Amino acid sequence: MNSLPVTIDKDYILSLRHELHMYPELAFDLPKTTALIRRELGSLGIPYTEQYGKSSIVGFLNPDCKGHSVALRADTDALPLTEKTDLPYASRYPEKMHACGHDAHTAMLLGAAKALKSVENMLPCRVVLIFQACEEGDQSGAKLMVEDGVTELFDEIVGMHIENWLEVGSVGICPGVSMAASHPIYIEFFGKSAHATLPHSGVNALAMAVETYNGIHALQATRTNPFSRYVCSVGMLRAGVTDNVIPDYAEMMISLRTYDKETEQFFVDNIRRIAENAATVRGGTIAFRDEEKALPLTNDQDVSARVLKAAAKVVGDAQIVTMPQKLSSEDFSFYLSRRPGAFLRLGTRNAAKGCTTLPHNNDFLLDEDALELGSRIFVQFILDFKEEAK
Image 1: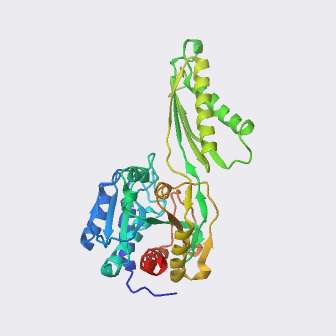
Image 2 (image 1 turned 135 degrees about the vertical axis):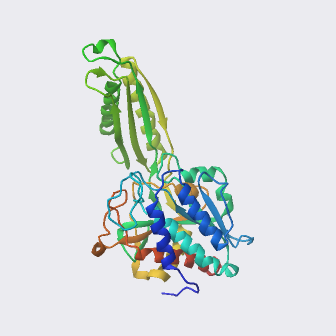
Image 3 (image 1 turned 180 degrees about the vertical axis):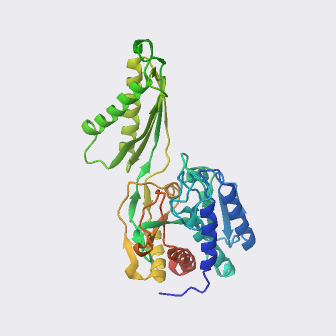
């Protein structure tokens, strides 16, 4: 394994991660998080802009370089969970927690930025540092940044996500199509309230929703290609406030994950039709909203090979693994729809330290020894660029 010609400040990375972890924020409402990023970029003398997306920051290293530009991305938002870890730096906010490692991602990228800044005049390319909001929320922060033209700033992009399926010290990537598209659906049902003993005088919104729920299951059982790879799961159905009133309103939220547009559109069109029919039969109406939250994530072969070569210099060839495809989603895919890139998995599992719980759980823990490695991989990839590009 090669040693870097720069120092990675592990204490700096951990300090930032702990500060971010104590004050988690959601979606685009990130005042403390963005203030921290501004503070650190400012103290490092790294210029930045906030003109792309919402509550997102883009920094620049070697900004006057006229050649190749490489982007490194971290997501910054947390999840609506109440933390149950007993960590000394556990969340200070009820119902908010960094349970997916975005605090680690942000700290690792700032750690890499600090190291690269120290050799800025030697960098073989321009480096674009993307601190992106709202990877977890209803709206994609990456999509907003892409719509604002952020991909015009770089030629290729690399992202990294902590991975509690992988042992600490390991790095993985799934070649080609790696993750599914995410297309959540939200349906509102509108009826007319009535006394429970006079159901014929009302329009039961709950009944519309229940028929829609059953129709979705029938759709999967009888009309969906059994060889299709997808998830279509009703995660929320809510209606009514008491036992003796026919509800006039119900709402439903559906998680849809697919690898191809044809399957995605099949479900969107048919779920809409099922809901409309269920409402019409009972004299009600619906409001239907669907959102393209993430595209299928496809890793570029060339960028993947180069970033894995850099990672092998940090962790060793034996620690490089091939990851399986996942039906989970990542809005990093929006960057990859415009520019080639790769999305790495950084092993953070360590049973001896209790770091085995998967993300999106309120007792999620990760082995922080991995974070220095993550920053090293980012730095090694940038410093290797000149050699690899020949």
